[in-house]
Amino acid sequence: MVSAQKSSAVSSSLPRKCKITVASPLLPATLPDWLELLEKRHPKTIDLGLERCNEVWLRMGSPLPAEKIFVVAGTNGKGSTVSTLCALLDSLGKRYGSYTSPHIETYNERVRVAGLAVSDDTLIEAFLRIEAARDGRSLSYFEFSTLAAIDILHRAELEFAVMEVGLGGRLDAVNILDADCAVITPIGLDHQAYLGNDRYSIGREKAGIIRAGRPVICGDPEPPASIAETAAAKGAAVRQLGRDFSITERAGRARYRSNGLELDVPLPVLAGHHQLGNMATALAALLELVPSAADSIDALECGLRSVSLHGRFERIMQKPTVWLDVGHNPLAAEAVARALREAMVAEGIQRCRCVLGMLADKDAAAVVGPLQPLIAHWYCAGLGSGRGQSGEQLARQVKETLNGQQLEVYDRVGNALEAALRASASNDAVLVFGSFLTVTDAIRHLRTDTARIPPEGQG
Image (cartoon, rainbow, N blue to C red):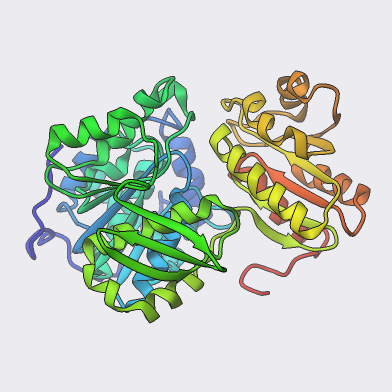
């Protein structure tokens, strides 16, 4: 990989704010058509490696998304950490943007400038520039998306970019960029076919985002040894949750401590005890690149109170309560189980049903295990994507783990959710869980089929 030098000349061949008004008649004219093309064009949905993406990036002039770059990798908590870090940058008045994946409702969510999703036209213009630069090279959907995000953020002339790794780290397209601060969230078992079958191997892949002499913030209080080993080999200092910085809850507030610094901050807006660690990780990363932020406690308070993120134990309905969570691995299930247990006790909820939809390559039996004692009835739903599976297939995977618990099978998430809602009293709850696609399907159903929740952007 060739790293770009951060200078004003980095993209002399790429004029900023270039407006492309005419596209080839052979290329799509709308964003949905572009996305359909990108999904079909490359032979592999997941195709790790930096060579293809790096070659096109160099042909684009090696644009950087911002003056300073946070790269966030990990198994769980990436989205929450990115959202918290962005909210803090916003509250400090910084010019910032972000790149995340996957999306829940619209593709535009993946690329944001100052918290706002970019327009279809902005994405299409970036796609056209990449199309011209790739010169026949085949790029995966994610590689094309990543280059578009870099291009768009670069043209916005930002101080900070927060870039979320899609899968792994070492061979993920985002890793063509050199992180000024590498952020690694908790490590668990997921994507074993690509990253390895144990935490040590997976940690080594995540640690691939570490750069020589650049700081590393680790939000896993018990990280695999491969994180420290990689950092040491590169001469990068690691600051670890529970060792170098910490956060505790006290009297309805949170106390953040690091190297003699103490900050009294609000509890996380996002639900669940695990969000304390994600918030502390975001604070540690911010203070690494913006140490003066510690003197702006009012701004930090405002930023932490403004964090917003769909699908992380998110309450979307009441009477009955409906929670949505995109978690899809055992580590996420453990966090959601704790949050669910605490919420049920606090709110006097006696029965919770679960609408479960998962991709075929996930360990469904291991995921339902932590939730099994809390769920009264399961509704296995099919997912329609290429990596999805039917409700019948999912039910076969989890049946033994559920040990005789009530289980029903449905062809799609919307039908399963309707059945769960019909069976629920006003003081019951429904958890929709297992995949980003599961949450997406649930939201679409509630908006279009039953109008139980307001349209996107309202309410």
